[in-house]
Image 1 (tube, rainbow, N blue to C red):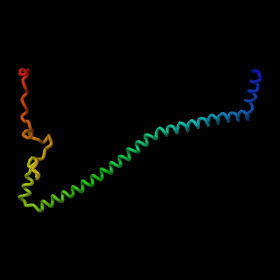
Image 2: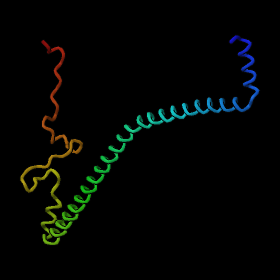
Image 3: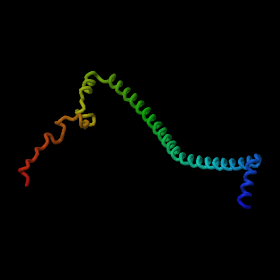
Image 4: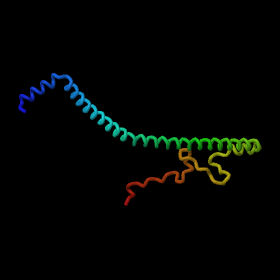
Length: 146
């Protein structure tokens, strides 16, 4: 077919609404279906990339819940231990004479304990007399160097 016959066939095709509409519908449906397929493909890959961080965050949440439970148990244990020690202290106060209570109250942190050892104070509470090397050694003059 020559060029003129193609132009004439195209003109007839464009003027007849039924074949043109059906072909247009097929083309638009094909393009839309392809785009819909690509949208689903990209959505699946996007979801797959987000699943790894979600699993990581869920694992961290589970570990935090475990840690919270462990800390809560430790707090309960320490509260019961504190209550037991308060009962022991109250029992000692009721059973000791006033003189023994004064002796216990007079015991400072540098007094010998019941085990015969001195309690070591934190560094900011120590006095100069408690340091091993006090006063500090004198600096050697520069003229005395070899």
